[in-house]
Length: 460
Ligand code: PLP
Image (cartoon, rainbow, N blue to C red; front, side, top):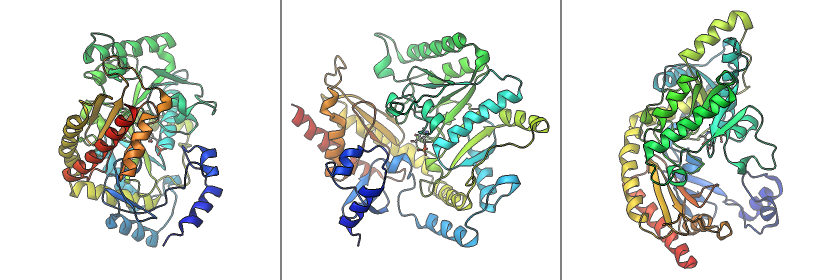
């Protein structure tokens, strides 16, 4: 049995928690930490014995659900055989080589190689270095700027945090760093002009991107990074025609496309990768989260043939590729990833996400789209969001001090559901494990519905 009081005291005294109000937590005003002790399927359990449906799969990562012993066994087998060796200077392990081959075969674009890291953030740092390396080797030393989008999320490290397009992640931390440009968010609901349909909005966003590249000078712009579906910025699928229009601009200016598939990869959208769903042909692909379903940390920067060819051709001139981490290609993480991908294949989880995802989208729309405080119900596959507004006809936002989404999230939690109040706006996000059944979707939506109605009544 967990000694709740003792663990809470130790935690409060010693852990620096991400995204936590430090003073309120340290003083106890924000209550005790939630001590998570177990998980099975789509549910986690806390130290008081309480079960919660995890409508956010941890942080959009536990795609195969909790408590899969196949993965624990694979981790244990590898730990007993060889817990660690590095991958510098052409060292490898069975599990790693097999995993890399799998990823190259399943990734979108014409993939050639995988560089392994530990997190989505470090994989995007690697992508930036790859862009700079690629253009140095091509003799284009000025072609280095990277464009991302307002409300895009690409991580929290120094450069990936700079790519992230939300000031909330920059303020008081001296970000963004140089060499990053931001272009407009693809969110149609908030950004479309009167009378502008989705295709026209996509064309406008592409024209703005084109203008930005021309203003900066195409010879200075190396890459564009984006999530196929905007994730932490609001779980927002792209408007119709968006990726067709954007990719035409990138090709025109010889600008690489980095698809940040950290959330969308491995089935979450109902396609193998978000890039497949939207006809994207990326030059670089970032993967993490679903790769191991979060069971251990692992990420990958997947490099296309086009980019790798330049790296290979340049090797005689520049020597070895001088980038790597102690834990790049960690054998335990590789073994876990192979076990996770085995489950995804055996249980056809992408197809399951497609059909259950379609059910989720239908039921979300049925439950919420008519409510007075819901401006938009959106999503694709197994990710969905509710956008709350004070007035549907004018799209007036709630006063932020009312903390509408946070209160709804808390009301859901009180009823046994984790749904995330997204960091930017009054948005409640859902990204459950891909193994969730239709009956569990019903349970999730019933709780969310009660929570929304409770806060609606409080606001009335
Ligand atoms: N890219 C995307 C699209 C993400 O959603 C995230 C995390 O949520 C990251 C990158 C950063 O990943 P990590 O938190 O593992 O560093």
